[in-house]
Amino acid sequence: MSPVSRWLSVVCACAVLVGVLAAVQTDSINAGKKAPGVSTYLKNIQTGNPEFKSIGRMSFGPQGLLVVADTGSASIVVIDTGDRGPMRKLKNRVDDVDVKVAQSLGAKPGGADIIDMAVNSLSGKIYLSVKRKSDNQSVLLTINADGKIENFDLSKAKFVKVTLPGGKKSTVRNITGVDFASDRILAAGQCNEEFANKLYSIPYPLEHGSSANIYSAETYHVAHRRWETRAPIQSFVPVEEDGQNYIVGAFACTPIAKFPIGDLKSGSKVTGISVVELGSGNRPLDMISYEKDGKKWLVTNTFRFHWKKNMYGPSKWWGVRVSMDYLSAKNTNEDATRRDVKKEKGPDGIEIVDALSGAVHIDKLSNEEIVVLRDDDGRLDLELARLP
Image 1 (spheres, rainbow, N blue to C red):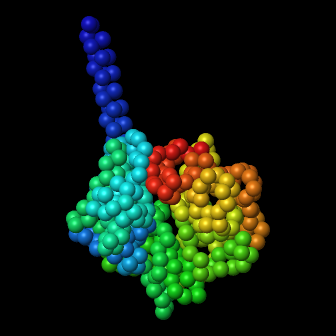
Image 2: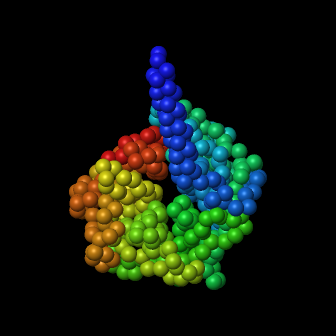
C-alpha cells in the first residue's frame, strides 16, 4: 500500500470512529431525555414495608415505578420495583391463574381475590394486587414470562406514600383508579358527601408524607339524562391536549367524559364534558389508550350487570374501543354521541373489540398487545391478546 493510501485509510478510520462516538454521545443524551432518573418522580424515598391496609388499583409508570392505591389508609403508594427489563413477555397462556394465586398464598381455590393487574412495559412482568380472604392480608404477586407466580417482597420495598384528603367533613371511601401522567400522578375516588366524586393530583416529585390536591367533579350522565356528583369515575387515562392536562374517564351506565385539571386550585369543582355514551347497564373496569396506523384509540373493558346472553357475545365481560377524535367532539353532554347498542360497530369510530370478550382486567403492554385476565366459565386465565 502506498503512503497516500495508508494516509487515506487512517483518515477514513478516524472519521468513522468520530462518527461512532458522536452517535453514542447523541444516543446517551437522547436516552437521558427519554428516561429521567427515579429522583425526578420520587422524593424522600423510604425503605421497608408500606403496610397496605387494603391493597387496590395499580398502574405502571416510567422506570418500573408502580403506583398502588391503598383504600384502607386513603393513600397511594409508589414503589420503585427496580424492574427495568430486559423485555420477556408472557410466553403462553396461564390457565386457572386464580387457583394458582390462591395456592401460592396457602389458600384453597376461591380463597383469594385478584383486585387488579398491571404489566410493566419495560420487562413484560405482570403484577397482581391480591387479598387473601381468610385474614384480609394484602399481597403483591408477580408472574414472569414462564408463568411462574412469585411473591413481591414488600419488607424491603423502596417507596413513597401520599395521603388522599377527603372533603371538609368527609373521608375517602374508595379509590377507583391511579395512573401516571406527564407531570403528575392522578387518582380518582369517592367520599361520603354530596360532591362525592373526587379527582386527585400530585405533581412530581412525589414526596413521602405529603398530601394530594383534591377536586370535586360533576358529570352529565347521558343515559340518566341528568347531572350527577356522586358517581365515581370507574376507570380513566390521563390525556394531554394543547398543553392542558385532562382525565378521560368512564362511569357506570356508561358515559365517557373528560375533565380539565391542569391549572385548577386544590378544592375547586370541575365539570366534566361527556363526549360518548356506551349504553346503560354497564360498569367499566379498566381503560387504556393506544395508537395504531396513525390513529389514537381509547379502550375499555366493561361488565354488563343487566346482562342478556348474546347481546355482546357469550360473556358478561366485553370491551369496546372509541376513537380519540371524540374527545374534541362538538356534540357533548345532552347531545353526546351514543353507541349503537344493537350492532357491533357504530357510529363511526366506536366498535366492540372481540379480544376483550370475558376480559375481567386488561393492561397495555405495547401499541400491539395487551395482557388480559379472562373469565373462563368461572375460572381466570391470563394471556396476551392483539389490539385491533
